[in-house]
Length: 363
Ligand SMILES: *Cc1c(COP(=O)(O)O)cnc(C)c1O
Image (cartoon, rainbow, N blue to C red; front, side, top):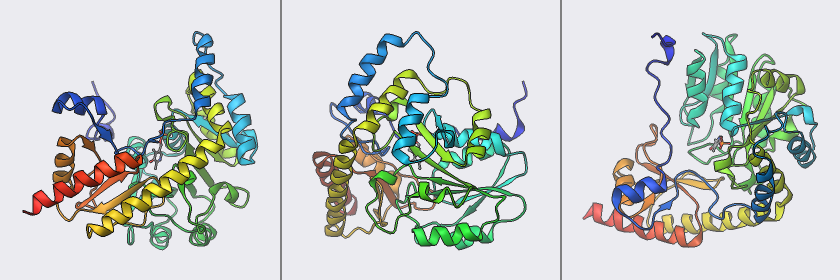
């Protein structure tokens, strides 16, 4: 058998370790996962009711066009229905964009430490990835602009950036967009936008009228707490969204996910509450890192990168043995771990364990 030559050596995506696996492997009863930026408060209670009602219909194919959800989201965002596309997570929207746009040899620009799904999908489609180093943990928009040429098709900007948690400001972004030639698509991944409290942060949706080459990605996996249901979306110019729709599988999102997302949108009070609790958790974690003398990157999502000043993989293993799962092994940040903001109890347990791990290691 002969697979496409350029996929033969691609890595398989390594997700945050599942709780069940860690319990089994280490014989632990209690395990806290602060590794995948999930919502520690679950999802709105309206979601469970919506799912239960939808159970009546599981033998019937979903609405491939997700009309109810599209209408609800269009109203929520103030955009037309034909500007929206749903995917099996926004991960799928990333895959669909690369499928619709890249041919072998196209170039695509992204940060050298950002969400890995851009590169994995670009690689699958045979595009050449130009990875531009972050500057102080932040997207270097000037350097990204300088990397543009006639082969450039897509630039990926993750805002807030995963894993660094940093943001680009509205003014930096519009200066950049004004300078980008119109043949280049800008994908603005705003998976964590609902958590951001900084007033310089741009809302990508407001840029769409002026910049038809921008596509905004968002998701129900993070603040809405629906990660397991796999539903995310892209918003952009209607012509671009139509092209992406042309390569979408007919039934890519489930009835349960669509119904859950409609219900989740209705409960903005839950979203506001989670945003506030997340901000409080962030203040707590930063205060504790200060107390421990650890530096960290300015964090604007629901996770933070902290410098543990030793190989992050060692700290990962030590925390794992204490039943705490975090992320480590970020290529450009070998001494940093990424931890999601949990509940106050989870945050306290994480800090206690981290302190023990760091003290033991320095004896
Ligand atoms: C979590 C995440 C996503 C997508 O998540 P889905 O569950 O596929 O919607 C997209 N981009 C970034 C940066 C993320 O962290």
